[in-house]
Amino acid sequence: MTATSTEQRINGYDPRALAEAEAIRTRAAAEAEAARIAAEAEAKAKLAAAEEEARKLRLANDKAEARAREEQAAREARIAKLNREREEQERAARETAEKAAVQEQAEAVKAAEAAAAEEQWRKYALRFYAVCAIVAMPVQIAAFYNPHARWLLAAPIMLEGGAWVVLKGARAAAISHRPHWHYRMIAWLLAFIAAGINLWHGLNAFDPATAIGTAFASIAGPGVYDLHEHGQLRKRDGKLSWRQRRAKVKAERAEVARKAAEGEQRAAEKEAAEKAAEEARRQLAETRAREFPKVWEHAVRLAAAVGETTVTEAVWKRAHRDVEGTDPAESADIIRMRNAAELRVEAARQKRPVSTVSKTTNAQRASQVPAAKKPRVYSPPARRGVRTKGDVKYTPAASRQASIAAKKAAAKKDPS
Image 1 (cartoon, rainbow, N blue to C red):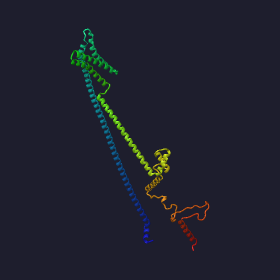
Image 2 (cartoon, one colour):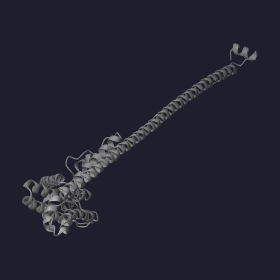
Image 3 (tube, rainbow, N blue to C red):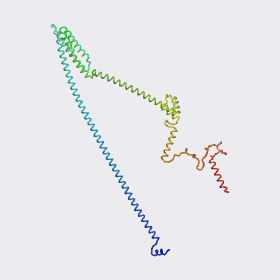
């Protein structure tokens, strides 16, 4: 101990205690600094986390707001589209209703015009009938006049009026949907009788013009009225005119021709499809015979055995299973290839090389044993349960290793 340390101890100072105190103060200061730095780092981390959380929250709020705006816009677009569609439907309905009203009005006007024309045509026919009767009656009265048989003057009225009455009967029969042809035939017969009387008496008592004119009047009056009534009946029964019948026949012929053309086209398409299918079957058979000769040969024999004229899909499937042991599109080679590919994919995913037993030089050889130059040939003993010399044969590498081990053991036993 030196004089200085003695003096310091005497004065009440211990250098070791001072050093320890200084070390404690330094460690406390370091710990305080470390705690402060850790607190600041933690505070900064919390602040950064809070800022990140606030940023994420802002982004989430922005996304939610944007999504809400998009949904609102989409909703408004759908509503606008529905409104447009409804307006278009309402407008189309109004247009359809207006067109229907206009068409109905036009049809009503047309029907009124047709009715007016029909009524006018009927009046004209009646008036023409009356005029023809007035023209034809005098000649007939002159023909039947006899001072001693004045009652014969009713014959012209019977002829002309009879035709009129019978035509009215034909109209009534037609309205009741009864046969009316015989009424019309009787009316025409009466008209021709009256015409014949007018023609005979006119030529004998008057001139040819009078005879022909009165004969024509006897026929024209009932004929025009019958033409009017016949047209009404055809219209009521929905009978077609000559032009309409001709157009209908033409349309029917065109329809028959169209159907015949469609039938020929369908037959041609069917024939082409059958030819294409037959060609596809032939190509498939050639491909199968070329790519799978053994399976095809067995399939041909199997088809003949089961009574099939061709190799059907069922026969081919059975033949493939008989030869390859699997269904079509599968075989032992395909399964091995798939397994190898799956191993390569698995090795690539795990980032390791593909190592299999088949790729090692000798899976059962230890690492310290040299590789054999010749493959090992195993020859079992002649008698089971009895071992003789030479029964067990080792590879050259194993023999060399055993010789080296024996020499080392002998050297250890005999150190001299």
